[in-house]
Amino acid sequence: MTRIARDQINAHEWRKVTALAWAVARARTDGTRAAKAKCLLTFLDELDTKYGESVDVLATRAEYVSSARSRVWLLRRAYRLASRLRDRHNLMLIACSLAEHYAEQNGMGREARRWLGVLKEHLRRNPDEYGIRWARELEEQLK
Image 1: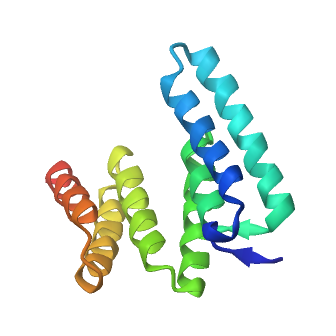
Image 2: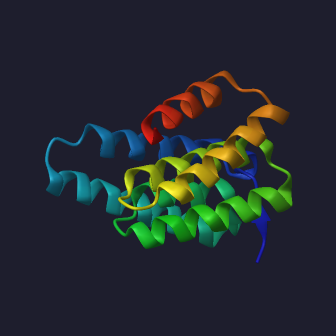
């Protein structure tokens, strides 16, 4: 399977992903939100078919699946792919998403702290203001 970075996906198509994600965020009812998320996931399927596996598509899909197990699987797969591609920015974002996910789950504090440590290591090597702020908030949440 071909593996690509988001910058290889047509910019018009990625703008459509962004617009669909905003439509999900702006949905006023659970039913509308679910329908908009389904449209987004369908479009991500189309991008997978057209371009092959992408870190950004995997990580974006993870934000909109309903199953926590699927979310973790997608984020870990995206993390492994980003690692192979040496995609430092996405490594930091995905580590943050995993730390946040585990922090929100009861009984998963140990895993949340592990991913927070991974995030901090990425930030040590590649400082990012947004990532540093996110890490601090997660640290507070885990106290």
